Length: 84
Image (cartoon, rainbow, N blue to C red):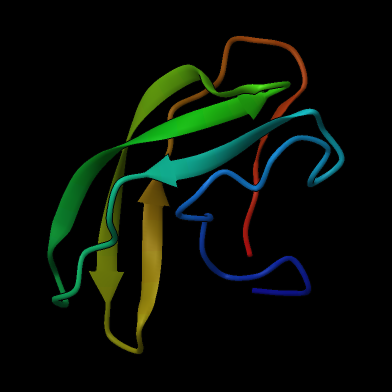
């Protein structure tokens, strides 16, 4: 938690966010019930392509209305998972 935010965006933040031109965002939904894990895709937006690359991720809903993300490593240069 900090100035960057607490969740991965649920829509493309467009390029040049989080100090990169390849920004990760959750192309799916967050779980609503505590203890539930959902499997969704993380898209990396670059240029005019909102989903240049897509990776699988899991998201767990926790007590206190926060989420734990299980993220895959990214094999391209200069991508970042961002929060809002």
